[in-house]
Structure formats: C-alpha cells, structure tokens
Picture (cartoon, helix red, strand yellow):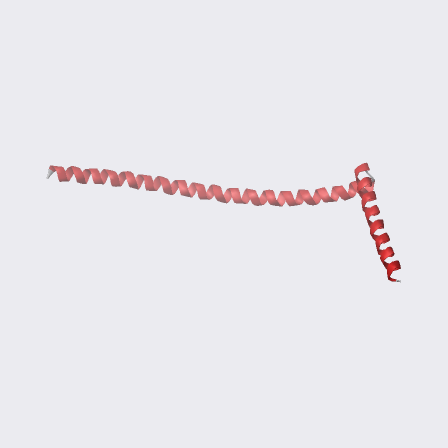
Length: 98
C-alpha cells in the first residue's frame, strides 16, 4: 500500500512539474508571438522608410541632373547619343525602303 502511495505521490509530483513546464511554455509562446508581431511592424516601417528614401533619392538625382553635375552630364550625354544613334538607324531603314 505504501508503494502505491509513493507511486501516486511521484505521479502527482511529475504532473505538477509538467503543468509548470506547460505554463512556462505558454508564457514563452506568448512572448515570442508578441516579439514576432513587433518585428513585423518594424519590418513594415523599414519597408515604408526605404520606399520613401528611394523616392527622395530619385528626386535628388533629377535635381542634380538639372543642376548639371558632371556625373549627370555624362549620363545625359550618353542617353542623347543613344537616342541619336537610334534615330539615325530609323532614318537609314526609311531610306532603304524607298
């Protein structure tokens, strides 16, 4: 009988330990979920900030090209030369058709 009582006591002790672990796991899961939500909000905020900064960078690039910086002048000249080459190619094709 005493052996049965010891087994029951051991089972009760193990059940209490398991319940405590279950409670700790529940708190850990809840904490991780809140951290995940916070991380998602931070990621969304960073995406929005990145988009805004890209837009601002594009605007500044256009402003620099209007101001005539050396880098933008080279880029603009290259684009113009490319367009001229394309127009020349079209003119040559028209002459060949005629």
